[in-house]
Length: 183
Image 1: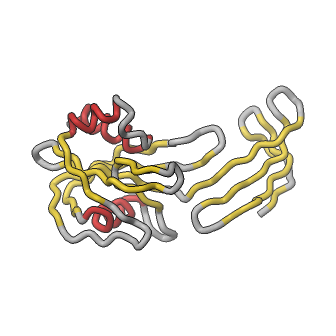
Image 2 (image 1 turned 30 degrees about the vertical axis):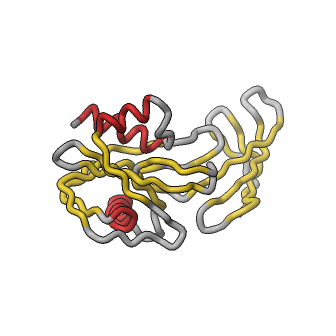
């Protein structure tokens, strides 16, 4: 995809934009721009598949997190259930599907907690946030690329892990802190 009609983008002008890479999960665009100072430049933006993050919490205020090796950061991370929204699927349906697939939890009560933009300078990756309550456990059915261990812990412990940078996934951090504040 390429566009060559100049258009305003905040204080920037995009003079030309071209997709330089695309696969089912990401699209990378390179823009030829006029910067806010009037000088020419370039700006590249990575567009990720829109996603969801969901935090399951039970009646004891225990939360259920995933522990999994993540290729991008090259280490095991502790985070809320997260995944990409498939074409034709809405965010809440994705959240329900991912929670069941990844850690085998089904929830009767769902709270929409808004959207998180984990990156804002060069990556577009809006993530819809949900709190899942009134939960029951079923069989997990993770994808072949997912080796996930479900970790249950008190919400207060999860908050401490966020504050000590032991949980670093931005949507998960926000969900945990929001859940602590509202519950």
